[in-house]
Image 1 (tube, rainbow, N blue to C red):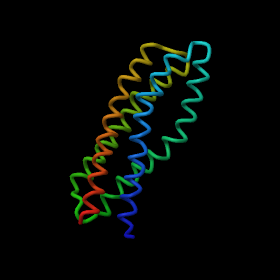
Image 2: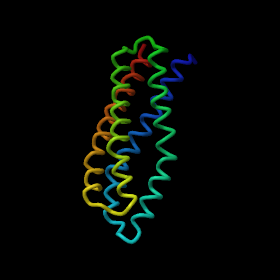
Image 3: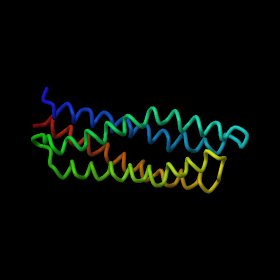
Image 4: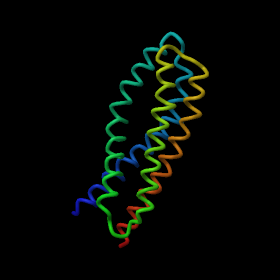
Length: 148
């Protein structure tokens, strides 16, 4: 197998994993924050931040690195515009994470704050939609690869 194809497959796998994860977080996990209760919330939030990082961090790094490497290792049949759009979505996701979601979590680690919680849940739609779009994009790339 050609190394560019292996890189694409790693990009597809990491992106699709993250698509599933972000939907679970958006629809199941974040809404449950409101039900934890004041007494246990700080501990719950600390554990959430620590544990989710072990899952999300490596996958986001794999997605980012493989998306960048694909620009230098082109695959016949996959238009560069798809690769640039994919990188743009990754950048949007990372910026949203760093500038919006991480500060919300940092505020919540001190105790439940309704406004921070509402902003976290609402703003997380940025990542949910961006990762879903990336999922469609990498699926299209895979289809183009398989149909050549």
